[in-house]
Image 1 (spheres, helix red, strand yellow):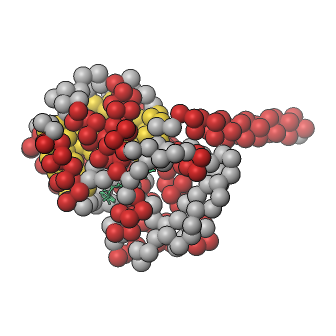
Image 2: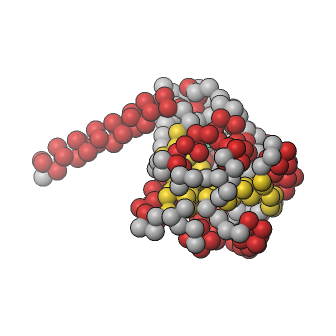
Image 3: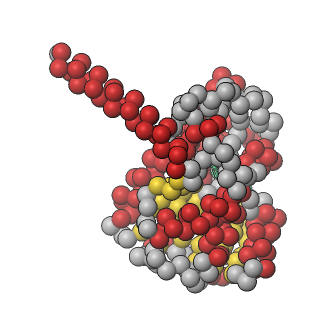
Length: 284
Ligand SMILES: NC(=O)c1ccc[n+]([C@@H]2O[C@H](COP(=O)([O-])OP(=O)(O)OC[C@H]3O[C@@H](n4cnc5c(N)ncnc54)[C@H](O)[C@@H]3O)[C@@H](O)[C@H]2O)c1
């Protein structure tokens, strides 16, 4: 999708951090932005910021774990913005930063319900609307560098599992939707300034256990860790990167290019084990 001006975007988790950065970046390209968040005040503040800058935005409360909530949001986008060209499934949580042993079952359920099922449900509900705009239609799912590299760094096993799922799902969708000329990108940011640790606890529903999320401090990272090695980026800088990647229909969107080394090391380990397998198979 080359020409963004006047087109309509929906950004979940748009009320804070990376979602806000994406929303501002899209609005700067004269897109109409539906800023959606489980925290309506956050969505309203970002929509107001866009309008103050002369842009067009609406604020919507949405809980991406609920199909019903998403369906109401889609109806509002259709009615108030007249269609949809860009779906940014960005809402995500970091339920706990602690060793794998110290993660509770509820941590796993909460993490997967937002970071994986939330993205799947968002796409399920909004795809019919998006299809009406193809080929001017694109999806950006927010994963993480932690969706490509799991080694060392931060004690976030459930989060990493959810982000690997997001990358896999996005890669699959990209293949499947190419025939319909709907682009799919997966955003894999390094560390970006945001409110992730606070909002993840604050928004945690009671059904997912207690909300005190962070018991373990970050462990010293190993050399592969993109999270620990990288410096933090202001969220506003993510928006223009996403815009350029959408225009170029890139499959992966990176904010920290030097994290490539960590990904190379991971793939080298995988290739090494193909070599190992080739030798092992040769022996049988
Ligand atoms: N900040 C980073 O360093 C970083 C790095 C890689 C990936 N990410 C990912 O970026 C995305 C945005 O996170 P962020 O860092 O900007 O954090 P953030 O907490 O500042 O923003 C996330 C937003 O999502 C909203 N949200 C949470 N649960 C929701 C739900 N069920 N329905 C709708 N909205 C919900 C929150 O209210 C919040 O406004 C997440 O998917 C996160 O995993 C963040």
